[in-house]
Length: 165
Image 1 (cartoon, rainbow, N blue to C red):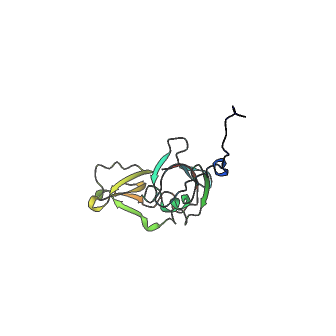
Image 2: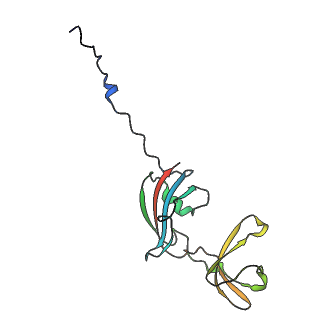
Image 3: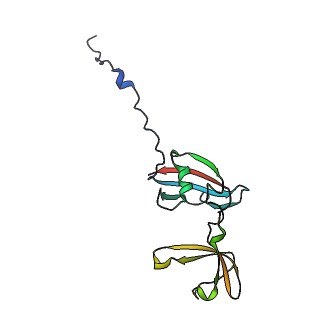
């Protein structure tokens, strides 16, 4: 037995596999990359990144509606889910008070007014902006809808979390 190497016994701890790290999940302050699709319940798609580059966003940064961000909380990296949200859960009811007829003379002359288009406006003081959907145009006025385009509609929100950074 003199020529055989001596092999020390292996401790049971050395044979154990290291514990797997728990999968990262989306938190209120996560920075993440994802694909998402918004459609109405009839299947009409309004926005999708699935055939494009994925979106990268900071949770709580205002890039995605708060109600949609809420759906993402707790999802794991690699998880794909579909959420159906009522109009109230999604973008709220359509508010008729956010539909305004504005005299053409009150609008900046450089704005091209085309029905069924989205027009960007600067907020008073120039600290931000907002958009209005131009529903109709006449000789003297323009009818704008400042509701979210999906306000008053139930939606389907499909998401795939690619990475939590």
